[in-house]
Image (tube, rainbow, N blue to C red):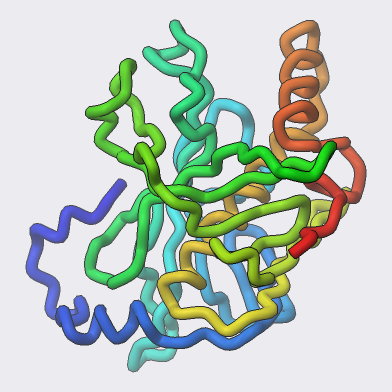
Length: 257
């Protein structure tokens, strides 16, 4: 759950240190998922991030996963800093109502406010000017649910896109290329970051990539007894997100910047 920051912890960074950390520049790199850890280039490298659950093997029942950043310490073992809660909403009012259109199915919610630049974001469908082309945007959300009819987190009215996702590619609000995702049928996932990013933007992109892997796993999971509900679920994923159940993963189209 989210860090309330009420306890005094001498190991926590000062305000000045946290502000600098949020604007630290991360260089282009390749990230790979290995179990519950995210590494640079190969699974045998030191982990950069850890998840409390295997993000690519979750069922439709799981609603929250914790993402922590592994920070160096004097012992050399690394310290897990809880950065984000990754959230999946299936419905509203405990399943009695369908999820409203102004609420995100997948979202990332800050677990700490000690680092500058981090935002609560949700994925939202966006219409493209190109016929037959679809994309999603990551926009700010109100996690309090105060402006939602059902009291659930919803998109901030008039909130501007922070990231744009089309197929396997991510861009910023100005459609500058940032990263490319790769998925395969053996649940191998990688994120090739092609641009230098401030630390906060890098953390948010990693969190959103984790949501993609979660979504990909749900869409491609083997169902022993699917029944009509399983068929409907696959049709919904295919319609909303372009999943095809192949090694192409999401979409398959390039990002036309």
